[in-house]
Amino acid sequence: MESFERAFSLARELKAALDAEVTRAQGERVLIRNFDVQGLFKRAAMRGDFNSDLLRLQGALGKALEVVGEELELPEVSLESLGRAVPTEARRLSALLAEVRALACALGELDDLNRRLALRASACVRGYLNTVAPPATYDRRGAAPAMPTTTFSGRA
Image 1 (cartoon, helix red, strand yellow):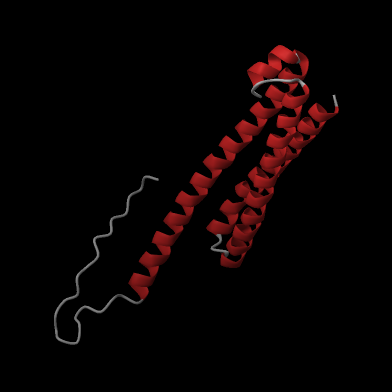
Image 2 (spheres, one colour):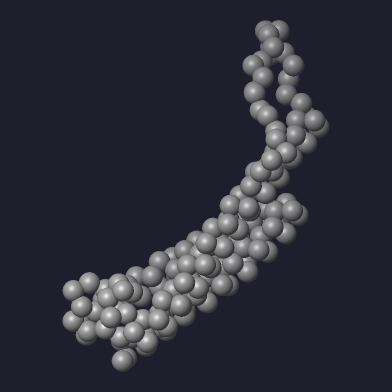
């Protein structure tokens, strides 16, 4: 079934893209740790490209599965309905999509970790700058400026 093979091909492409992005996201920690601003901006641009590619692949996979559903004359396309019509292919597709979901979940966890690390790095830089060049103690009228209520926690 040619349309099913197209869907498999797109799902494998989706998995490969997510796998590569997970690897890149793991390397992002080094950029944060080294305060590599240019590297982080480059990574952000790469993530934007990845997001648009992923969106394109998801749309193409959806269309390919619609074609499969039309060929099989299914009222709706789901793994369950595909499993009743073509069980072997549905199991293969289900396993592949499970891998895609696992990679997407891993990428989300890495993104959360990287965000927390970036927030910690930002707090360290702010603390360093406040120590090196503290804010003025008094304004030009002799009044003390309002102090920000910033707290730091060892927990992420």
